[in-house]
Image (tube, rainbow over all chains, first blue to last red; front, side, top):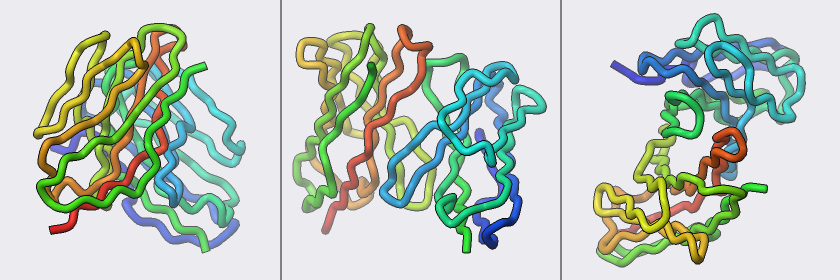
Length: 112
Length: 113
C-alpha cells in the first residue's frame, strides 16, 4: 500500500532519447508535484497540479511536459534528453496546497 | 520573497552526541514550518512540523520550535544514533504566496559509532 509510487525507479538512457516517468498516489490528494534533485541534494520544484490543473510551472525547459490524466496521476515526459537532465526526479502529493507534502521514492535518471 | 536558509553541511557527529541543525526563514506572512528527512536512496519524509509561532513539533526524539521573533526553526535531538544519518531539509509554506513550498538546501548528517 505505497502512498506515492513512481516508475521506473532507475532509468539509464542515451542522449537524445525521449522518456517518461509515471506517478500515482492513493492518498486521495488533489495536488501533485514534480521535483528535481541534483547531485548536491538541492531540491527544485518543476511543476504542480491541483485538480488536474497546472498551478506551478517553474522555469523548466519545454522538453519537459507534465500530464495529469486524473487527480491520482501525474506523469512526466522528457524529450531529447541531455546529459544535464541526469538527476533524481521526485513525484509528490498533498491535500490542498501548503499542507504536508508526501514524496515518492524517486526515479534515478542517468543520461549517457 | 520567501526563502529558507539552513546550515551548511556535512555534519559528522559521534553516536549519543547532541544535534542542532539551524534553520532560518524569510516569509511575507505567517508560514507553516516543516522538517523533512531523506534517508539514503529514499524520498523525503515529513519529520515534524509547526503551524504557528511558539508551536513545538516533535517526532522520533527530534524537536523544533517555531520562533517568530528570530524567524527560526532549529532542529534538535539530544542523543543521535547511527540510524539518524540522513539529509535533513527545512521548509516553509506561506498562504500569502499561494501556499507554495520553499525548501532549504539540505544538511547532510553522518553519525559514527
